[in-house]
Length: 453
Ligand code: ST9
Ligand code: ZN
Ligand code: ZN
Image 1 (cartoon, helix red, strand yellow):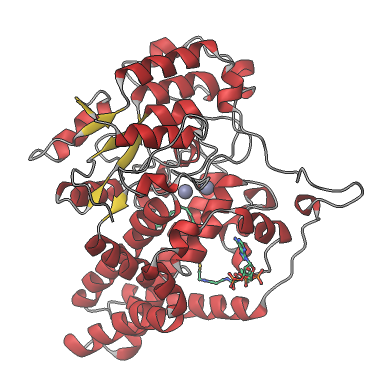
Image 2 (tube, helix red, strand yellow):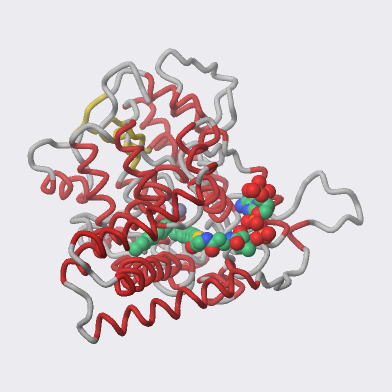
């Protein structure tokens, strides 16, 4: 069985022996067993019901026996070993005297082509702002641009991020096609490249192997990393990340192969030509506003997750890592600013604990497609998992009306001794998800048919 736990998408005839089980494969086996529908337990579950009144999500949880065992495991075993992950900074096979790739000093090798292109983008975008403020943008162009922006944003949040990089849910072909199109509109590199950089970012956060290591400052994490060569550790550790799931998908490989023409047409030419041809927007206004400014705005909204949300905000779930809860970023990034939660539970399709969608338009988007049956097997973590984690490693900023009182036993020393420190698992399918977390993860909207995409 592949170590990435890819049995999860292999179908129900797949079996695993006890001996060969990884924490993840254990869960796979449970997935394939008869499921026990339960009623929503957390506040967010209840609120999600409110948002989809016509059909309550079907919740499939681990069996009662497994849940009991995992709760006992949580109590009895060394909690530290359950939550603390090895900081993957040293290669165990390194020979004496050899410099570890993670320890190679950082240097800035500027790629001037990118500097020039980004300067060009910002100049034309600034002109787009001027055209808007001086009332020269037609209202049709404004609405069109907002639509294309939302399309590109969701292609990143619901597509590249939550679906492909983290495997937090599964999608049927029509939804995959929509997501590929929308991700291409965003022009943030191919899905394959985006996901590989993002998986390595989660696995090695704030180290030299993190492509946008926030320890190198706001500007580097924000956009500087796209203006210079990557640290050798990014490439070295990135090669060890399992990408077989994406590489086996012809859609992903097609997009990668034809990325340049696809991106030029969907992200630049199509937004410009539609506004120019259909309602007679001036060509230069359509280019600067619908194409350049829209793209530039989308990039900065996304980059804020790597910069601001890695530097500023509360850390209610793990105080030992950089990623933080940042409301401002969430507003601009379609719900992707709840970043402390996301790095602790990267396989949760909501990337947040919150109910009522709290600026989490992307979760609403995925819920909608689950409701019509195009998205399924939505992974989310249980309320108990969250509370346990908050108690063990949070910074004390977590406030949940009903539960806050039960958290008073948390101490700084306890919390700081058990956090992830740096990287964690990259998502659903990573063998490094702790056994308890894997067992207690819930699956919403399971696919009923025997066939899976
Ligand atoms: C952009 C991406 O902006 C933004 C991503 C942000 C992620 C945020 C995540 C937060 C959550 C989501 C929030 C969404 C919110 C959305 C809100 C929207 C309203 N592993 O790259 P090269 C190897 S893109 C393994 O040239 P250099 C590999 O062998 C913007 N190996 O490295 C590769 O060959 P290949 C537009 C790796 O020379 C070879 O190295 N795009 C890895 O150091 C050479 O690769 C741009 O601006 C890895 N991770 O150059 C493009 N990486 O793959 C900018 C590399 O072909 N990029 N290798 O086999 C570049 O020009 C270059 O990559 C470079 C580095 C100059 C940055
Ligand atoms: Zn991050
Ligand atoms: Zn992520």
